[in-house]
Length: 316
Ligand code: Q46
Ligand code: ZN
Image 1 (cartoon, rainbow, N blue to C red):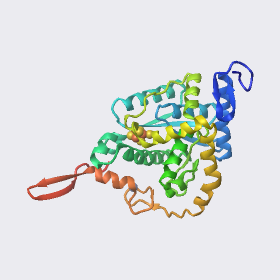
Image 2: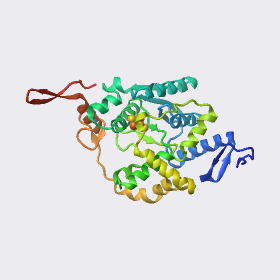
Image 3: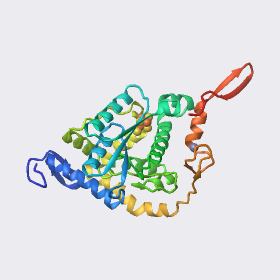
Image 4: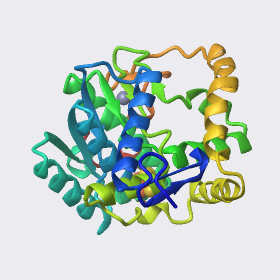
């Protein structure tokens, strides 16, 4: 198989584009794809400071490397979730990358910030780890971006992520979530930072190939809490369809954006206000994060026949 661009021996085939590339042409192709996404979706303006959420995995390090090469002024943001052996390794890879390229990096230790690691938070609130983790990540990343004066936060969600999420939301007709499935979430409130997903046209396999060809060392392990997640099942189903019908994955997500989402967005009428506890944007009086943390700090004390719920850990 030959490279579609230079006719050298191809290293990777991309069936949905009906193309194959040698190493250097693939790197240029992927960076071009990301730049086109950024421009067509108006994700980043020239000279804008970008906060990049980096876990240390293939997608986020691929994103950071591409943005760095495209000339954007980036700062990394790593959340140390305190998950067993998984978190230290991701943090190590992120710090090594930042140091190697002399890039600024902010690390937030969730336990230090909130009083609980993600597993402790799950135990305290009796919610699945991913539920508290997702909410904490969104909240802490938004707050870090606001406090650091960043106009935009970039995350490494790729085509596999968004196509699988779309399938899940369609299967259950989660209309509210479908409405929010946009490559760009604008800053619809002064306490919300614009978020963008520049890798939505890049698959997981391509992010891996990019990191390997660029020599970017990433954390290969998945979070232990991801095992058995329904999102993995949806990814598998989408990949099975893609294998027999190349291009379906991208078309599924892109056509949703063109044909369906505009109708949903038109009906979106959410009024945001400031959380009475923390000042972040919310639809109710107190935001979901503050309510979750309040629950985590409470313990139930039983004395004789009397049961009381008391605040055990003071607010951070
Ligand atoms: S890190 Fe957190 Fe993920 Fe681990 S606990 Fe779940 S949400 S799986 S992207
Ligand atoms: Zn709050």
